[in-house]
Image (cartoon, rainbow, N blue to C red; front, side, top):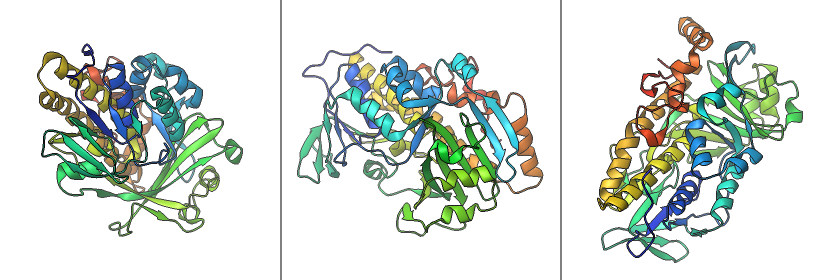
Amino acid sequence: MPASPTPGASAPRIAIVGAGIGGLTLALELRRRGLEPQVYDQAEELREVGAAVGLSANAVRFLHERLGLAEGLAARSTAVDALVFRDGHTGAVLGRVDSGADYQRRYGTPWYGIHRADFQQVLAGALQGAGLHLGHRLERLDDDGAAAVLHFANGAVAEADIVIGADGARSMLRTHVVGYDDAQFSGCFGFRGIVDGDAIAGLPDPAALQFWIGPTGHLLHYPIGEGRQNFLLVRRHQGPWTAPGWVTPAEPGEHLSLFADWHPAVRAMIGGAPADQRWALFERPPLHQWSRGRVTLLGDAAHAMVPHHGQGANQSIEDVMVLADCLIESLADGSGWERGRQKYQQRRLARTRRVQIASHTVADVLHQAPGPLAERRDARLAAPGFWDRHLDWIHGYVADAGEAQSSSGNQPSSGKPLAT
């Protein structure tokens, strides 16, 4: 890890747009390294959209080792002890990988489930408000002069030498970089919810992350502490998404009627939360350039992906650590941020593209109709060595050690996405 510079007059003015997981984590890491970034978010108070997040070892190692958040994470989350695939109608186990003590032995950290709001509070508590500006919705960015000028809806104006777009999947700054809105509908929509343990007393394997799969969709759920389960219920959608927004109101009980013939445990899970909104699952195509002018993208703004591998937040945290290293290195050796951000992009482009593609193809695999392809999928899920072939390249990846490094000793480049 490059040495940190001494703050001073030569330190760049850094503006981070977005105080979600990526933005707050970057602010913490840069401040730890001696810089003083300013974070701007449109919310009047910090609140995460969505229910929960799974934090895998490829991100948790940095939260533990660099940011010292192990105690805070452990207090607000729960560790996942297995990955289980089930038939959504019969409940039969199609594949199972224990991921408790073995996971920690291989990777050095637990695999956590945590409510997004709790995780955001862990990050915000560590930041203690330093450089955080809420109620600042970015309306316009001028980048033609001696500095980037950010204009906010509340009338505030800020200047920066470096602007980091951490403003999420519907990023305004991605539109600035690309020149147009390039969001793409993935062909699926979902319902999200958090269910208390009392509503799902008969749930098998409550400490596991589980996929219940079928030809029309799937249910993903995992524990997040205090007996609660977070779920994402995914449904295939025929044709384009024509609703005016990404999130639309759902009819009462719509999610129940769509999965009425599924296993009783599935119906109990999804019946334990109102799920009154329908979430279209959008993604962004991989980019060749993550920067324009003084603006550089991070996290979902750079590579928004569907959640079928649970890697959105984890890839953002990987981005943070590589970006921080490249920035510090460019300041230390005098090569300049233009060179630093190109190195950041070079180190992250192939990795995030691969995770994006793998995440997209998982839905196609999980939603196979009964027949030979589904039988071949089930055989893969049940085969010994499933984790090493299909998932170690994600969880074992060490982002600040180069493209082919794995904490488990395997080479991530040899791993295969589930779809292959």
